Length: 288
Picture 1 (cartoon, one colour):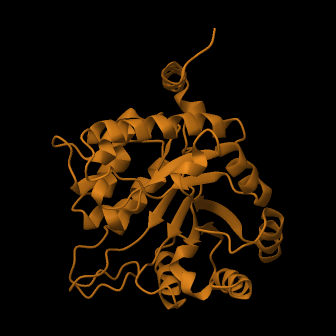
Picture 2 (spheres, helix red, strand yellow; picture 1 turned 90 degrees about the vertical axis):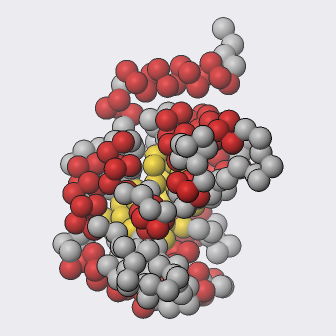
């Protein structure tokens, strides 16, 4: 019997519900490691030589892995060799929603497996301003990501979504789009919580970890920044603003089994200073 797209999704959701342990994106008891989202230092990576030098500098700081946001024009085999030579692990990549839709996802999977990455994270989505059914928009996104996650599963890969602030601030009928998305997505869809954005939106990231357990293989370790607070974007330095409650968050991610803290510092992409200070913060806290 031929299944349509919606029937396929319903079947996938039912299967996930009956095999939660097998499909859980975050195995309990896993050891968390620290990676860098390379968007943090994009100003240093404007050509291939800068790309290579920056990867080495990131490893020299002590980061165990990296998460990509573009590949600097390198092929998958070239990336694999660079990463292997440096001893850097693959903590994921950020890529456009179109790359995980049915007509592109296998190509995306093949490229990422070619350099050893299994974590495919969509970093942005939002309903157009003139969208008349914003709840429907987020439900459709949940459906698309769920189908992608089931396809990726066949190759041992994971698909997830990374939040900004609008998913919490721009309520739809009093409900956060983030909740609409994850209430309707397969448990296989990873929740890559950007904790700095969640706190900046006035929310508690720990509460969201508890609401959607077993979905967070990777987390964006980011501090609040900007405005007049004096915050620098360095972890543990929120200035006068309410910062991330890191001790509470560490407990939550330990319970969750999060595999990667992916550090992201957005205040200055032309220096390693902030990403080093953020690594030092996590090191002092015993996280790496």
